[in-house]
Amino acid sequence: MKAGSPPSPKYRQLQRQLARLGYLSQGSVFERGPGQQGSRYVWTRKVKAKTVTVALSQEQYHWMRQAVANQRQLEEIIQQMQILSRQTLFETSPESPGVNDWERQF
Figure 1 (tube, rainbow, N blue to C red):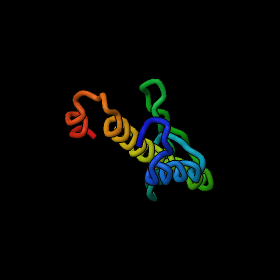
Figure 2 (cartoon, rainbow, N blue to C red):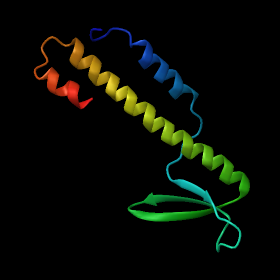
Figure 3 (cartoon, helix red, strand yellow):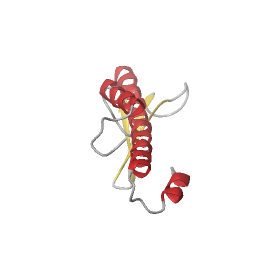
Figure 4 (cartoon, rainbow, N blue to C red):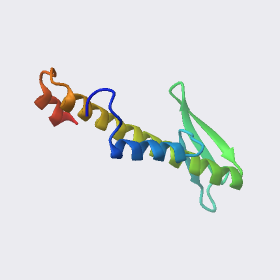
């Protein structure tokens, strides 16, 4: 594929996956077991290198759990898209010195 050509079928599939993602959130969510201190449902994330903890209702917990899962899926999809982009660039550009070096790093 040359520059300006339509994306590969795999790349288009990844684009469609991106379009289907719902709400996004960084961080982690967890449910504390019975007998543990603190709120039962918790969301944590880093803000300016410090961990911030937020107590959640059960409904918020389920919503946030899906948003965090979506965020992780987003990161995986973007990583795959970046790899495909680099492969396309270095496989189709006739003036790419060191293509073999790049192929090993995908």
